[in-house]
Image (cartoon, rainbow, N blue to C red; front, side, top):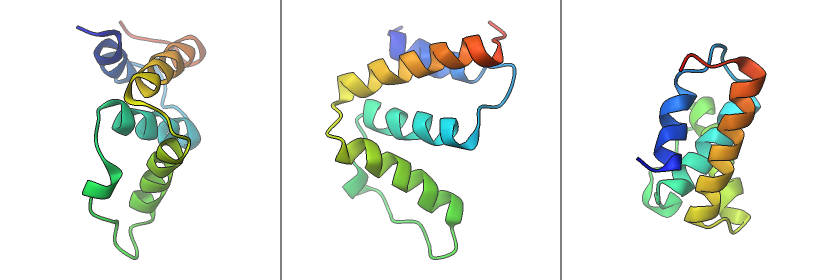
Length: 90
């Protein structure tokens, strides 16, 4: 199991829910780190505010020119920070 895959698994075992901003950052890094292409995804509907926020977070990572490998490393680092901050049931 890669460190990225372990971090994805660990993110589900945090003792408390991360903030909305932390969740959005995790989402954007996960999508890029997973190799998903934003241009291949359907745009969220007009009243899908949650979907729009998630897509904006994903676009932010894409616009920063973050590679798949860098996104995975950043994701792992963020999950480690959240484990220390929020606790972890692992």
